[in-house]
Each structure stands twice: as C-alpha cells, then as structure tokens.
Length: 230
Ligand code: DC
Image: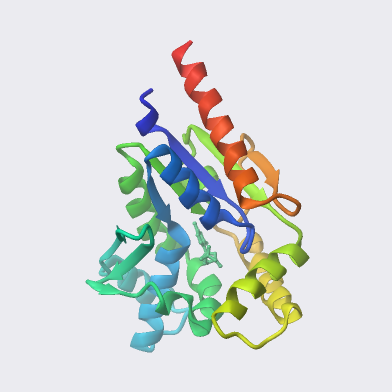
C-alpha cells in the first residue's frame, strides 16, 4: 500500500474534535479531507431555503440527489463547501441548520444519496473522512478506523469557546443541552446510528490536546504502513 492511498475513517459525537483532528491528519499525510457532516448540513440548508419540511423524506431525497456538492481547499488551508456553485461554508454552521440537521440526516433516502457520493470520492483511496457512520457504513473497509469521544462537559466547553469567539452570547449549559439532544438523536436513529465500528480504535480526547490526538493517529497510521511493508 502506498502511503498516499490509505483510507482513514474518523467518527464521533459533536464536539469530540473530529473535524480539527481529521484535517490535521490529512494535511500531515498529504491526503484528501472530507467532512461528511457538512454535506448533511448543505442539504438541510437547501431544504430550509426551499421551504421543505426537515421530515419530508421524499422531497428531501430528491433535493439531495439534484444538489451538486464540492469541497475546495483554499490557499490558506481552509476548506470551503460549494453547493450548486455557491460557497455555503458559513451558512451551513448557522443555528437553524444546526437545529434541523439531525432530522434531515436521519432520513434513509437522504443518507443513501450522500453515502454513495462519499464512497465515490473515497474509491481511489488517500482520504480522511469524518462523520458518524464512516467506519460502520460508508467505508467499512477503511485501513484505520478511529472513534473520538469526550465528556459532554468538555465538548460543550470547546463548542462554547468556538462560538463565543464568533459573537455567541449564550451559556455553556445551553450548548450542552443542544449537544446532548443531537447526540441522543444521532445515536438513537434506526439508520446508521452513531456508534463505534467493532474494529475501531476509541480515543477519549477529554484530557488530550489536539496535537496529542493527531500524534496518536499518525503513530497508528505509521504502524499500519510498516505492517504493509513487512
Ligand atoms: O459533524 P456535524 O456536527 O457537522 O454533523 C452534522 C449532523 O449531520 C450531525 O447531527 C449528524 C449528521 N451526520 C450524520 O448523520 N452522518 C455523518 N456521516 C455526518 C454527520
């Protein structure tokens, strides 16, 4: 296996540090990074814009199928998601999208459409993908599967610091309530619930810094490469 062909799945609940860690790992290994949560967020945004209910499965699946999504890495290293040619990277993080994305992502036909796109992107290899069902459903053959966890309190603290820096005036407790609601929904849904794949490596990031988590994953990736070379 060539180093640039490895496939890494990183799953975990909201605020576990998945996307920051996945981006850093992808950069360190020269791999493509794919944020699957952003894809569910984009479909949710489009549904809200079109006035489609986040529980109308048929319409949402049709909407997902006709939506063109592409990721672009800017020269400053930031990732941008384009929906039908428009940069929606900011809008997909808005409160209405965050409120409704769990409902949209629980619809089996929406998942079917987006999972197919995710699998097509990963087919050539050389990708780090983060989400909830990457190790279990999207890429069950991934070379390395990581499941990141952290206590609810720590995840709420991280998210609060991030949002506060962007002008949010609410409390950490409000964030904790929202994270708990989303986790319960994502873990309790019938299709592709949030759960670690049996062969995933679980890392509790509550007491770890980003660099430490990235370092552990890079060590796991390099032991994977050396096993391949044996
Ligand atoms: O990672 P995130 O918070 O941006 O994800 C937004 C929502 O999308 C989250 O509530 C769960 C859902 N999601 C999913 O169901 N499957 C994925 N692979 C990624 C995200």
